[in-house]
Length: 237
Image (cartoon, rainbow, N blue to C red; front, side, top):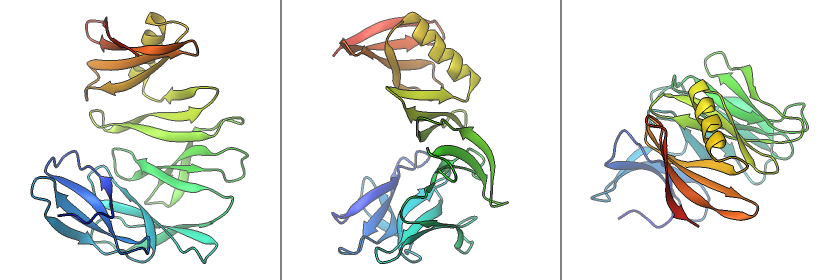
């Protein structure tokens, strides 16, 4: 059976029988990576920790491609990267442990473009695209002078990042994909003056579950058929 001290790194959606897990060595805070069969609980080692990696990031094919390595006694964090399973690990960024931020958020569908959250020279963190082959920032995805960037929203059906989140007075999403932007506008048009959040959807977004709430209304869950444009009330909170 899997040890108690482990964390799921990737649920491997293309491999429903397995999860990728980090199994911790005692109390060190360091872990090695294993594939675990969800039915038999059998563990198969994927890789040893190449140093002092404490955070891991896989690409969209479930391959471990990035790690954030640091030691409590040091004042820097290293972001390490490898091109594929056979490549050596290399350091692509060294960040002071306090103050500066440079955090990998996830790959795009090409498994080359990386989305990072960083605050270099800014009062708030922004989201950028970073080319892992050229080792450089290639574009600004989201930047706001008042609000810090949050995370990215990836769609497996479209194989691309379709939105980014940030925290304003309320959680907000900037949709990068025009179809999702239109869908969000249609939802807000159908449920005006409410905070409308897509909480679940089929992979092709043909069916969407929405939580609609306000500061005076704890909310209602709706099912939206995006092809028929039919909205059905499911549950009041």
